[in-house]
Image (cartoon, rainbow, N blue to C red; front, side, top):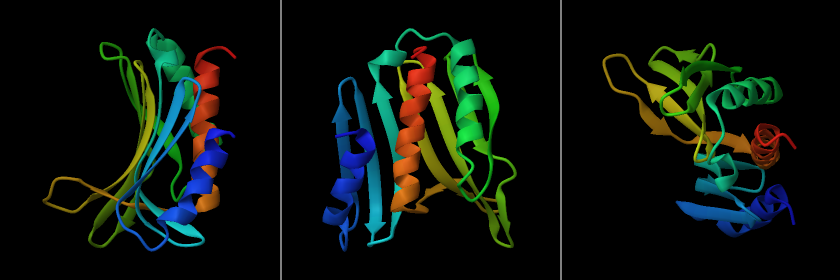
Length: 162
C-alpha cells in the first residue's frame, strides 16, 4: 500500500473525532498528518509531514531545485506556492503562498519547508494585524490530501535522483 493509500484509508476512522494523528510508513518514509476534524469529503489538517532519512546528506542546491519542482506541481491549493528563502547553513528551503489570501481581518497562507535531515512539511498560518502569526487548520478535501502526500513523495524521489 502506498503512503497515499495508507493515509486515505485511515481517514474514515477519524470522522467525528477531533485531534487525531494519522501515520503511514513505506520503507524509509513516514507520512504524518495531524487531523483536527474530518468528514466524508474534507479534512482540517494542522500539519502534514513526510519524513525520511533519505535526505540526510542532500545539498542545498538539490533541495532548492526540488522545492521549485514541488511548487510547480502543487497548483491545487487556495494560493500558488513559491520558494521564498533558502538557508544554506541549515540546509532548508522555505516556500509560501504567493500572494497570501487577504481578508479584512488578516492574511492566510501556506508554508512548506524542505529540509535536509529530512522532511517535507506543510502548515497553514493566519496573521492578523498587530499580532504574531498563528497556525490554523488547512481545510482540504481527502483527494487534495492524497495529492499532497504523492507530491511530497515525488519530491523526495527527485532529490535522490530517482
